[in-house]
Image (cartoon, rainbow, N blue to C red; front, top):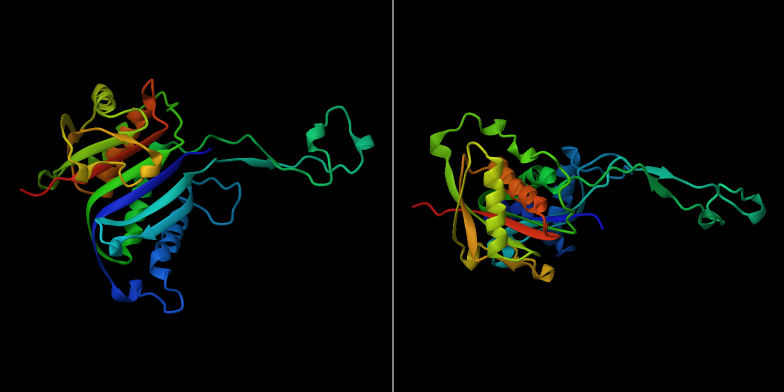
Length: 289
């Protein structure tokens, strides 16, 4: 199976009534409308394509729903599958008579219907590469429905492959090279994974510190109360959460800063010797003092 990512936004949405009013003939429209908005935004930004098999893209849109009206802090979420890029469809010859077979023909492909196969497919998009635009796409889509106040973003992945990168792509920080002191924002990163709790959080923090970074202050470990814990919204994955989180100081509270932070944690976690096959990372903005 290919990796799947779920992205959540938490906080408040003050909706534009005309854009969320349900159609009397389609009472589930509000529930389902984020799907079309998220898909349109993905296609417009070339993060996904619609009806173009074999075209390189970052993800396939699988699901998206508004949740602001359900009485929790979650505003909405989206689910995507990371695309296998550059695959070429290879259609074996159609055979109607076994006498026509030559020694170089695979017998499993003979018959009345040719079975397409995939050749020269590139690997799926690395999760760390997809996370920043994925958060941005959800944020853009939610803002179409009204004014948002985002307090946390979360990305959860499953069927994750270990990192094959020899470099550290999340170390590219030129976006933040001219920081504005007043924009610096305290936050807490929490993790839940298929590889355990607090020891796993500590291992991830140590690896990030080894790589080095600028403009972000990462660490120390801090207590992480349940209300900001990652992974609790997707219980079917049976992730184990840590009782500790990682205190961070972001150069700004933005999708760019949060996307870099979550992508960095994913890259570090998937680079560990015992990499998780399922992982959830949440960045929660600290309350103003």
